[in-house]
Amino acid sequence: MYIYNVTITLEPEIEAQWLDWMQQHHIPAMLATKKFSGALMTHIVTDQDLGGPTYSVQYRVSSKAVLEQYYAEDAPKLRAASAPFAGKFVAFRTELDIIKEFS
Image (cartoon, rainbow, N blue to C red; front, side):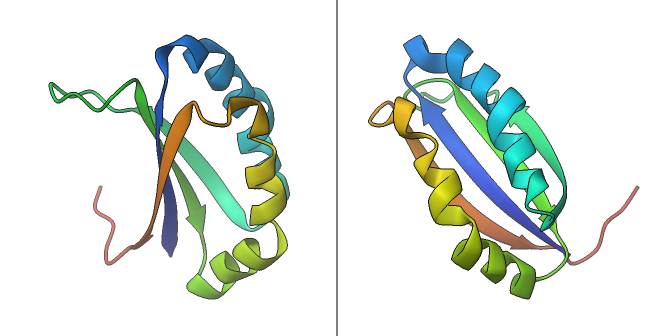
């Protein structure tokens, strides 16, 4: 199991509109690719100055191979959909290989 993590720092003035877009459009579109089994959206709470409101969205994916399919087949189109927010956010993407899950 993998997690595809996207950390996004926003300019404060777009936060409300961006949150609505993410929850109503972008995350559902990501899940509609059928490559991800779920998503978790979090607000990063810290004393550090991150340059603006910062969020992490973690998408669960079954394997590195399926994630590579997402990159090839879906990522350009889904990333392009963020054009209305261009220049007003910074995104940092990481891949996490789950070693073991505890509960």
